[in-house]
Length: 410
Image (cartoon, rainbow, N blue to C red; front, top):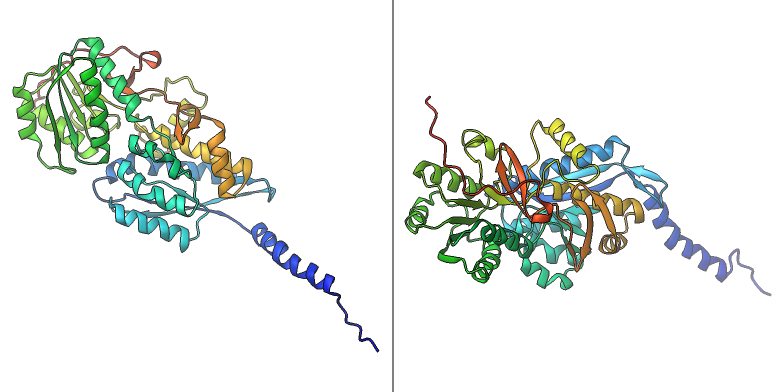
Protein backbone atom coordinates (compact mmCIF):
# COMPACT_ATOMS: atom_id res chain seq x y z
CA UNK A 1 0.00 0.00 0.00
CA UNK A 2 1.35 3.41 -1.04
CA UNK A 3 1.21 6.39 1.32
CA UNK A 4 0.29 9.63 -0.46
CA UNK A 5 2.10 12.77 0.64
CA UNK A 6 0.39 16.17 0.31
CA UNK A 7 3.30 17.61 -1.73
CA UNK A 8 5.32 16.13 -4.55
CA UNK A 9 9.06 16.72 -4.78
CA UNK A 10 8.39 19.03 -7.69
CA UNK A 11 6.01 21.10 -5.56
CA UNK A 12 8.59 21.37 -2.77
CA UNK A 13 11.25 22.48 -5.28
CA UNK A 14 8.97 25.20 -6.65
CA UNK A 15 8.18 26.42 -3.14
CA UNK A 16 11.86 26.63 -2.21
CA UNK A 17 12.64 28.45 -5.44
CA UNK A 18 9.92 30.95 -4.67
CA UNK A 19 11.41 31.61 -1.24
CA UNK A 20 14.84 32.17 -2.73
CA UNK A 21 13.75 34.40 -5.59
CA UNK A 22 10.52 36.10 -4.52
CA UNK A 23 11.48 37.01 -0.96
CA UNK A 24 14.47 39.20 -1.96
CA UNK A 25 12.31 40.90 -4.57
CA UNK A 26 9.53 41.63 -2.08
CA UNK A 27 12.13 42.82 0.43
CA UNK A 28 13.64 45.13 -2.20
CA UNK A 29 10.17 46.36 -3.12
CA UNK A 30 9.66 47.37 0.50
CA UNK A 31 12.65 49.74 0.33
CA UNK A 32 11.55 53.22 1.39
CA UNK A 33 14.71 55.33 0.92
CA UNK A 34 18.09 55.49 -0.75
CA UNK A 35 20.95 55.71 1.74
CA UNK A 36 23.96 57.66 0.49
CA UNK A 37 27.03 58.20 2.65
CA UNK A 38 30.18 60.26 2.57
CA UNK A 39 33.31 60.58 4.70
CA UNK A 40 34.61 64.09 4.09
CA UNK A 41 36.74 66.70 5.86
CA UNK A 42 34.71 68.64 8.43
CA UNK A 43 37.97 69.44 10.23
CA UNK A 44 41.69 69.63 9.42
CA UNK A 45 43.53 71.27 6.51
CA UNK A 46 41.15 69.93 3.85
CA UNK A 47 38.00 71.24 5.55
CA UNK A 48 38.13 74.68 3.88
CA UNK A 49 37.95 73.10 0.45
CA UNK A 50 35.36 70.49 1.41
CA UNK A 51 33.15 73.12 3.02
CA UNK A 52 33.29 75.30 -0.06
CA UNK A 53 33.17 72.83 -2.92
CA UNK A 54 31.42 69.56 -2.10
CA UNK A 55 29.38 69.69 1.09
CA UNK A 56 27.11 72.59 -0.01
CA UNK A 57 26.44 70.83 -3.31
CA UNK A 58 25.80 67.46 -1.69
CA UNK A 59 23.19 69.04 0.59
CA UNK A 60 21.69 71.18 -2.17
CA UNK A 61 21.28 68.18 -4.45
CA UNK A 62 19.73 65.98 -1.75
CA UNK A 63 17.26 68.71 -0.83
CA UNK A 64 16.32 69.26 -4.46
CA UNK A 65 15.85 65.54 -5.15
CA UNK A 66 13.76 65.05 -2.01
CA UNK A 67 11.66 68.13 -2.78
CA UNK A 68 10.47 66.40 -5.97
CA UNK A 69 9.76 63.15 -4.12
CA UNK A 70 13.11 61.41 -4.56
CA UNK A 71 14.81 59.48 -7.35
CA UNK A 72 12.56 57.45 -9.61
CA UNK A 73 13.40 53.73 -9.48
CA UNK A 74 12.05 51.98 -12.56
CA UNK A 75 11.84 48.45 -11.19
CA UNK A 76 9.88 49.70 -8.18
CA UNK A 77 7.77 52.10 -10.23
CA UNK A 78 8.11 54.75 -7.55
CA UNK A 79 10.33 57.49 -6.22
CA UNK A 80 12.56 57.03 -3.18
CA UNK A 81 13.89 59.92 -1.07
CA UNK A 82 17.58 60.18 -0.19
CA UNK A 83 19.02 59.90 3.32
CA UNK A 84 22.48 61.49 3.45
CA UNK A 85 24.99 60.27 6.07
CA UNK A 86 28.07 62.46 6.63
CA UNK A 87 31.14 61.54 8.73
CA UNK A 88 34.22 63.68 9.45
CA UNK A 89 37.36 62.11 8.01
CA UNK A 90 39.47 64.75 9.84
CA UNK A 91 41.60 65.28 6.71
CA UNK A 92 43.29 61.94 7.43
CA UNK A 93 43.69 59.19 4.83
CA UNK A 94 43.54 56.37 7.37
CA UNK A 95 40.36 57.74 8.88
CA UNK A 96 38.65 58.18 5.53
CA UNK A 97 39.30 54.54 4.61
CA UNK A 98 37.86 53.30 7.92
CA UNK A 99 34.78 55.48 7.60
CA UNK A 100 34.06 54.47 4.02
CA UNK A 101 34.21 50.81 5.07
CA UNK A 102 31.89 51.62 7.98
CA UNK A 103 29.42 53.25 5.60
CA UNK A 104 29.49 50.18 3.36
CA UNK A 105 29.60 47.34 5.90
CA UNK A 106 27.77 48.76 8.93
CA UNK A 107 25.50 51.49 7.58
CA UNK A 108 24.92 49.52 4.38
CA UNK A 109 24.57 52.60 2.23
CA UNK A 110 23.40 52.24 -1.35
CA UNK A 111 25.98 54.65 -2.76
CA UNK A 112 29.09 56.57 -1.66
CA UNK A 113 29.91 60.21 -2.34
CA UNK A 114 33.65 61.03 -2.38
CA UNK A 115 35.83 63.00 0.06
CA UNK A 116 37.73 66.18 -0.82
CA UNK A 117 41.16 66.36 -2.41
CA UNK A 118 43.53 64.24 -4.44
CA UNK A 119 45.13 62.30 -1.56
CA UNK A 120 41.76 61.36 -0.04
CA UNK A 121 40.38 60.18 -3.37
CA UNK A 122 43.46 58.03 -3.82
CA UNK A 123 42.93 56.53 -0.38
CA UNK A 124 39.37 55.37 -1.03
CA UNK A 125 39.79 54.20 -4.64
CA UNK A 126 40.85 50.61 -3.70
CA UNK A 127 38.08 50.41 -1.07
CA UNK A 128 35.20 51.39 -3.29
CA UNK A 129 36.55 49.12 -6.01
CA UNK A 130 36.79 46.19 -3.57
CA UNK A 131 33.15 46.57 -2.57
CA UNK A 132 32.03 47.62 -6.08
CA UNK A 133 30.63 51.06 -5.27
CA UNK A 134 30.79 53.51 -8.21
CA UNK A 135 32.25 56.87 -7.15
CA UNK A 136 32.70 60.02 -9.25
CA UNK A 137 35.52 62.16 -7.85
CA UNK A 138 35.12 65.93 -8.45
CA UNK A 139 38.20 67.19 -6.58
CA UNK A 140 40.98 64.89 -7.68
CA UNK A 141 43.49 66.07 -10.26
CA UNK A 142 45.89 63.18 -10.74
CA UNK A 143 47.82 61.63 -13.58
CA UNK A 144 48.93 58.76 -11.33
CA UNK A 145 45.33 57.69 -10.84
CA UNK A 146 44.91 57.72 -14.60
CA UNK A 147 47.79 55.23 -14.81
CA UNK A 148 46.02 52.75 -12.51
CA UNK A 149 42.44 53.49 -13.65
CA UNK A 150 42.15 50.06 -15.23
CA UNK A 151 42.65 48.54 -11.77
CA UNK A 152 39.87 50.61 -10.17
CA UNK A 153 37.02 50.56 -12.72
CA UNK A 154 34.48 51.71 -10.13
CA UNK A 155 36.27 55.05 -9.74
CA UNK A 156 35.72 57.97 -12.13
CA UNK A 157 37.66 61.24 -12.28
CA UNK A 158 35.48 64.28 -12.94
CA UNK A 159 37.89 67.24 -12.70
CA UNK A 160 40.18 68.30 -15.52
CA UNK A 161 43.62 66.78 -15.09
CA UNK A 162 47.14 68.26 -14.75
CA UNK A 163 47.99 67.46 -18.37
CA UNK A 164 45.24 69.78 -19.65
CA UNK A 165 45.60 72.47 -17.00
CA UNK A 166 49.40 72.58 -17.04
CA UNK A 167 49.45 72.96 -20.81
CA UNK A 168 46.82 75.71 -20.61
CA UNK A 169 48.77 77.59 -17.95
CA UNK A 170 52.10 77.47 -19.78
CA UNK A 171 50.42 78.50 -23.06
CA UNK A 172 49.33 81.70 -21.30
CA UNK A 173 52.87 82.32 -20.06
CA UNK A 174 54.20 81.92 -23.60
CA UNK A 175 51.45 84.11 -25.05
CA UNK A 176 52.12 87.07 -22.73
CA UNK A 177 55.92 86.79 -23.02
CA UNK A 178 57.06 85.33 -19.68
CA UNK A 179 60.78 84.47 -19.84
CA UNK A 180 61.51 83.41 -16.25
CA UNK A 181 59.24 81.71 -13.68
CA UNK A 182 59.47 80.44 -10.11
CA UNK A 183 57.56 77.23 -9.39
CA UNK A 184 56.66 76.23 -5.82
CA UNK A 185 54.28 73.55 -4.62
CA UNK A 186 52.66 72.07 -1.52
CA UNK A 187 54.28 68.77 -0.52
CA UNK A 188 51.08 66.79 -1.00
CA UNK A 189 49.79 64.59 -3.82
CA UNK A 190 48.15 67.53 -5.60
CA UNK A 191 51.19 69.80 -5.50
CA UNK A 192 53.66 67.09 -6.41
CA UNK A 193 51.68 65.92 -9.44
CA UNK A 194 50.88 69.40 -10.69
CA UNK A 195 54.45 70.63 -10.46
CA UNK A 196 55.69 67.49 -12.21
CA UNK A 197 53.53 68.42 -15.21
CA UNK A 198 54.14 72.18 -15.21
CA UNK A 199 57.96 71.97 -14.94
CA UNK A 200 58.46 69.99 -18.19
CA UNK A 201 55.99 72.28 -20.01
CA UNK A 202 58.08 75.29 -18.97
CA UNK A 203 61.15 73.57 -20.35
CA UNK A 204 59.46 72.86 -23.68
CA UNK A 205 58.58 76.54 -24.03
CA UNK A 206 62.15 77.61 -23.13
CA UNK A 207 60.95 79.42 -19.99
CA UNK A 208 63.73 79.58 -17.40
CA UNK A 209 62.89 78.18 -13.93
CA UNK A 210 65.53 79.30 -11.40
CA UNK A 211 63.40 78.26 -8.40
CA UNK A 212 61.60 74.93 -8.06
CA UNK A 213 60.82 74.16 -4.42
CA UNK A 214 58.19 72.56 -2.17
CA UNK A 215 56.80 73.63 1.19
CA UNK A 216 54.94 71.62 3.90
CA UNK A 217 51.18 71.05 3.91
CA UNK A 218 49.42 73.46 6.28
CA UNK A 219 52.52 75.67 6.58
CA UNK A 220 52.16 78.75 8.81
CA UNK A 221 54.87 80.97 7.30
CA UNK A 222 56.08 80.95 3.73
CA UNK A 223 57.69 84.41 3.74
CA UNK A 224 61.33 83.12 3.65
CA UNK A 225 60.62 81.28 0.40
CA UNK A 226 58.78 84.28 -1.03
CA UNK A 227 61.74 86.54 -0.22
CA UNK A 228 64.03 84.15 -2.08
CA UNK A 229 61.70 84.28 -5.08
CA UNK A 230 61.50 88.08 -4.96
CA UNK A 231 65.30 88.31 -5.14
CA UNK A 232 65.38 86.05 -8.21
CA UNK A 233 63.74 88.69 -10.45
CA UNK A 234 61.28 86.32 -12.16
CA UNK A 235 58.38 87.39 -14.41
CA UNK A 236 55.93 84.82 -13.04
CA UNK A 237 55.33 83.08 -9.72
CA UNK A 238 53.48 79.78 -10.05
CA UNK A 239 52.19 78.18 -6.84
CA UNK A 240 50.64 74.71 -6.87
CA UNK A 241 48.80 75.34 -3.60
CA UNK A 242 45.84 74.23 -1.49
CA UNK A 243 43.38 76.74 0.05
CA UNK A 244 45.12 77.48 3.36
CA UNK A 245 48.49 78.10 1.73
CA UNK A 246 46.89 79.93 -1.21
CA UNK A 247 45.47 82.43 1.27
CA UNK A 248 48.74 82.62 3.21
CA UNK A 249 50.87 83.21 0.10
CA UNK A 250 48.54 85.99 -1.07
CA UNK A 251 48.56 87.65 2.36
CA UNK A 252 52.33 87.54 2.75
CA UNK A 253 53.08 88.67 -0.82
CA UNK A 254 50.75 91.63 -0.32
CA UNK A 255 52.39 92.50 3.02
CA UNK A 256 55.83 92.31 1.38
CA UNK A 257 54.67 94.45 -1.52
CA UNK A 258 56.01 91.81 -3.87
CA UNK A 259 54.09 91.96 -7.16
CA UNK A 260 55.31 89.74 -10.01
CA UNK A 261 54.01 90.39 -13.51
CA UNK A 262 52.06 87.13 -13.36
CA UNK A 263 50.83 85.39 -10.21
CA UNK A 264 49.21 81.98 -10.41
CA UNK A 265 47.95 80.13 -7.31
CA UNK A 266 46.21 76.78 -7.03
CA UNK A 267 43.07 75.73 -5.18
CA UNK A 268 41.36 78.57 -3.31
CA UNK A 269 41.86 81.42 -5.78
CA UNK A 270 38.52 80.59 -7.38
CA UNK A 271 36.67 80.66 -4.04
CA UNK A 272 34.31 83.69 -3.90
CA UNK A 273 35.55 84.49 -0.38
CA UNK A 274 39.01 85.08 -1.87
CA UNK A 275 37.95 88.35 -3.47
CA UNK A 276 36.78 89.74 -0.12
CA UNK A 277 39.29 88.44 2.41
CA UNK A 278 42.11 90.74 1.28
CA UNK A 279 40.11 93.96 1.03
CA UNK A 280 37.97 93.68 -2.09
CA UNK A 281 38.06 92.66 -5.75
CA UNK A 282 40.55 95.38 -6.73
CA UNK A 283 43.20 93.80 -4.46
CA UNK A 284 43.18 90.49 -6.32
CA UNK A 285 42.79 91.92 -9.82
CA UNK A 286 44.82 89.90 -12.31
CA UNK A 287 45.56 86.90 -10.08
CA UNK A 288 45.19 83.58 -11.90
CA UNK A 289 44.08 80.29 -10.43
CA UNK A 290 43.22 76.64 -11.01
CA UNK A 291 39.91 75.75 -12.57
CA UNK A 292 37.59 77.91 -14.60
CA UNK A 293 33.81 78.16 -14.51
CA UNK A 294 31.46 81.09 -14.36
CA UNK A 295 27.75 81.67 -14.99
CA UNK A 296 28.43 82.71 -18.60
CA UNK A 297 29.30 79.16 -19.71
CA UNK A 298 26.95 78.06 -22.53
CA UNK A 299 25.48 74.95 -20.91
CA UNK A 300 21.75 74.40 -20.21
CA UNK A 301 20.96 74.70 -16.51
CA UNK A 302 24.34 76.20 -15.54
CA UNK A 303 23.11 79.70 -14.64
CA UNK A 304 20.02 78.23 -12.94
CA UNK A 305 22.20 76.02 -10.71
CA UNK A 306 24.37 79.02 -9.84
CA UNK A 307 21.28 81.03 -8.83
CA UNK A 308 19.90 78.17 -6.72
CA UNK A 309 23.24 77.77 -4.92
CA UNK A 310 23.36 81.50 -4.14
CA UNK A 311 19.76 81.48 -2.93
CA UNK A 312 20.24 78.48 -0.63
CA UNK A 313 23.64 79.34 0.86
CA UNK A 314 23.68 83.11 0.41
CA UNK A 315 27.04 82.81 -1.32
CA UNK A 316 28.41 81.97 -4.73
CA UNK A 317 29.78 78.52 -5.49
CA UNK A 318 33.51 78.41 -6.07
CA UNK A 319 34.66 78.69 -9.67
CA UNK A 320 37.13 75.82 -9.38
CA UNK A 321 35.25 72.58 -8.74
CA UNK A 322 31.78 73.34 -7.30
CA UNK A 323 30.24 72.93 -10.74
CA UNK A 324 32.15 69.66 -11.19
CA UNK A 325 30.80 68.45 -7.83
CA UNK A 326 27.22 69.23 -8.77
CA UNK A 327 27.72 67.76 -12.25
CA UNK A 328 28.96 64.51 -10.69
CA UNK A 329 25.67 64.30 -8.78
CA UNK A 330 23.74 64.93 -11.98
CA UNK A 331 25.58 62.00 -13.56
CA UNK A 332 24.76 59.76 -10.58
CA UNK A 333 21.11 60.84 -10.60
CA UNK A 334 20.67 60.23 -14.32
CA UNK A 335 22.33 56.81 -14.04
CA UNK A 336 20.21 55.63 -11.09
CA UNK A 337 16.99 56.77 -12.72
CA UNK A 338 17.99 54.94 -15.90
CA UNK A 339 19.14 51.57 -14.52
CA UNK A 340 18.04 51.47 -10.86
CA UNK A 341 19.95 50.69 -7.68
CA UNK A 342 22.13 47.87 -8.99
CA UNK A 343 25.61 49.35 -8.49
CA UNK A 344 27.19 47.27 -11.26
CA UNK A 345 24.62 48.54 -13.76
CA UNK A 346 25.09 52.10 -12.51
CA UNK A 347 28.86 51.80 -12.93
CA UNK A 348 28.51 50.45 -16.47
CA UNK A 349 26.02 53.16 -17.43
CA UNK A 350 28.35 55.91 -16.16
CA UNK A 351 31.22 54.42 -18.13
CA UNK A 352 29.40 54.27 -21.45
CA UNK A 353 27.10 57.28 -21.76
CA UNK A 354 27.11 61.06 -22.17
CA UNK A 355 25.39 63.24 -19.56
CA UNK A 356 24.07 66.80 -19.87
CA UNK A 357 25.39 68.75 -16.85
CA UNK A 358 26.22 72.26 -15.63
CA UNK A 359 29.78 71.84 -16.98
CA UNK A 360 28.59 70.61 -20.36
CA UNK A 361 28.21 67.12 -21.88
CA UNK A 362 30.16 64.84 -19.53
CA UNK A 363 31.64 61.69 -21.03
CA UNK A 364 34.20 59.33 -19.52
CA UNK A 365 37.09 57.80 -21.42
CA UNK A 366 39.24 55.35 -19.51
CA UNK A 367 37.55 56.43 -16.31
CA UNK A 368 38.14 60.17 -16.80
CA UNK A 369 35.79 62.93 -17.88
CA UNK A 370 36.86 64.55 -21.15
CA UNK A 371 34.60 67.62 -20.84
CA UNK A 372 35.67 70.84 -19.15
CA UNK A 373 34.37 74.44 -19.30
CA UNK A 374 37.92 75.79 -18.92
CA UNK A 375 41.36 75.17 -17.42
CA UNK A 376 42.68 78.44 -15.98
CA UNK A 377 40.80 81.45 -14.60
CA UNK A 378 41.74 85.02 -13.67
CA UNK A 379 40.08 87.63 -11.47
CA UNK A 380 39.01 90.57 -13.60
CA UNK A 381 36.76 93.31 -12.16
CA UNK A 382 35.34 90.97 -9.54
CA UNK A 383 34.62 88.12 -11.94
CA UNK A 384 36.58 84.88 -12.30
CA UNK A 385 37.00 84.86 -16.06
CA UNK A 386 38.04 81.82 -18.11
CA UNK A 387 41.37 82.66 -19.79
CA UNK A 388 42.49 79.17 -20.89
CA UNK A 389 42.21 77.44 -23.11
CA UNK A 390 41.80 80.07 -25.84
CA UNK A 391 38.79 78.34 -27.39
CA UNK A 392 36.87 78.54 -24.09
CA UNK A 393 37.81 82.07 -23.03
CA UNK A 394 35.32 84.47 -21.55
CA UNK A 395 38.06 87.16 -21.43
CA UNK A 396 41.65 87.74 -22.54
CA UNK A 397 44.31 87.42 -19.83
CA UNK A 398 45.48 90.60 -18.09
CA UNK A 399 49.28 91.04 -18.18
CA UNK A 400 51.10 92.35 -16.34
CA UNK A 401 49.22 91.94 -13.08
CA UNK A 402 48.18 95.33 -11.64
CA UNK A 403 50.11 96.41 -8.51
CA UNK A 404 48.69 95.78 -5.06
CA UNK A 405 46.52 98.80 -4.19
CA UNK A 406 47.68 100.92 -1.25
CA UNK A 407 46.31 100.08 2.19
CA UNK A 408 43.16 102.03 2.95
CA UNK A 409 43.28 104.27 6.00
CA UNK A 410 41.39 102.83 8.94
